[in-house]
Amino acid sequence: MNDKIKIILVDDEILFRKGISFLLEREKNMEIIFEASNGNELISFLELNKNHPDIIMMDLKMPEINGVEATKIIRKDFPDIKIIALTSYDSKSFVANMIDVGAVSYLMKNATPQDLLTTINQVALKGFYYTDYIMEIIKEDVLTNMKVKSNFESNFLTKREIEVLILICLQKSTVEIAEQLFISPRTVEGHRNNLLLKTESRNIAGLVVYAVQNDIILGIIS
Image 1 (cartoon, one colour):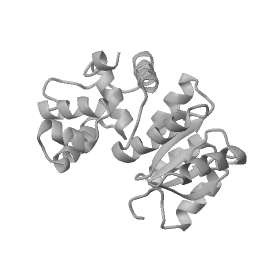
Image 2 (tube, helix red, strand yellow):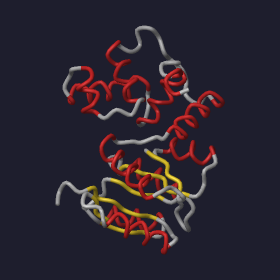
Image 3 (cartoon, one colour):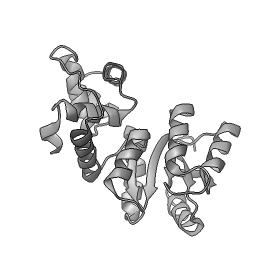
Image 4 (cartoon, rainbow, N blue to C red):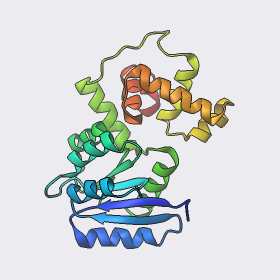
């Protein structure tokens, strides 16, 4: 069916990968279109096939091209594909780095099957999914390292753009934002694109970082 979420699994631990594959294939709205053991196999598949996934479940530590480097390549060459980091590493530096290079979600390998399904469905619906833990790491990373230059001025963003930004940071979908603000989904997308351009953010994580750094949502996610 065309409405299925197309997924690629990338992990060099074959038994673990097959277990995830078995779990996801039981879901009526999900389809595994390819499995890879490393970043090389993944990139080769994407370059040679037109059937691209909606989501890639990406392990971090792999031979040849690891998950971080593969994510960088995919964000550059295949920007429409969403990447979920799936790893046993929960250190804040790993999380911050993966979000920074373009992962739209971060899931631990010891998560429950329901956590996995929730993450995939939320990413498919909204384009990203950050747990409270990940949001806290994003906030701490910004406040300690101040990577993103602050350029917030009272007239830099319109009132409507700030409203959209806050709702994005609250992980509302395009449809939910449209309903709450009584505007069309297309208008929401327009505001989101303007926000990305004005804040020079590469993705939703960048918008969250910008909002935190400029105290727009500091109280909301603290």
